[in-house]
Image (cartoon, rainbow, N blue to C red; front, side, top):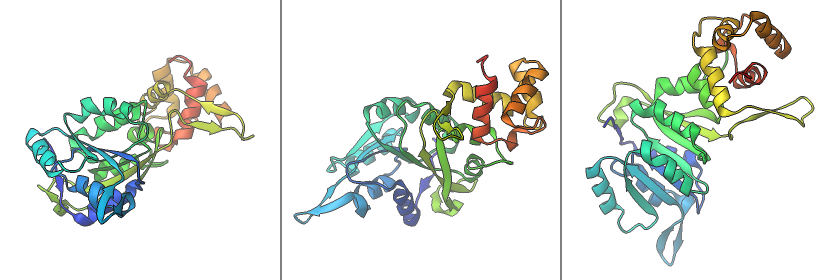
Length: 279
C-alpha cells in the first residue's frame, strides 16, 4: 500500500521529540505499521510517562490508524495491555475528519505513503479542528517545496503556509527504511497557526482577514502559469480590466511584473482582499 517502514530508532526518537508531548495530550498516528513509532510514543518517551509504585503509567492518549488488516491484528496484540493506545482499522482519508472532531486538542504524526502526501495535506488544511502540530515523514523534495520562501514560492508552499509554519527537522537516507524507497525522505514539522490567519495593520489594531476558499482560489489563479507575471495571471483568472488590476496592485505597493514565486503568503492575502471580490 505504498508504505515504507522506518527502522531507525534514532530517527523515531527525534520524531517523537519534535511533537513536544505533555502528559494528558492526544496523538493521532497515521499509518502505524508494525508499531515502532507507536511504541516510542506510548512507552519510551520520558516526557509523557511517570513511575507510580514501580510501574510505568502512560500520560498520552494514542489513536493509531492503520489500513492493512494483518498489521492491525499485529498492533492490537502488541498493545492489548496498553489502555492508552487505540488501534483503528481504516483508511486515514476516510477516518481523519471524524476522529479529529472527537478530539478537543491533539497532535498528528505519521510516516505517510508518499503518493498520499498531497491529498492528506489538503485534508489536514481543511479540517475544522486542526492539530496543534503535525510531524510527518514525507519525500524530501516535497518537504523542500513546502518550506520555500520568495523568490522560490510555489503553489504547495503558498497553500500550506496559509495555515501552518513549516520546518524540516530531519533528513533521512533511503537505507533507514524497509523496503528502501526510490527517493530521499525528510521529516517536516508543521506548527498550525490558525485558519484563516490575519495581518496586523501598521497601527497594530485592525486586522485583515480572508476566507480559506477565497485565498486558495487566488493561489490557484496566481500559480496557474508560474512563468507569467502576476498582472497577466490576475487578468486572465479574474476577468478584470488591466486598469483595475494595476490600480489594485499599486494600492498594495506591488510591482506589475512580479511573478508568483516572488509573493509571500501575506502578499497573496492582501491581493485576495483587494481583488478577490468576485469569488
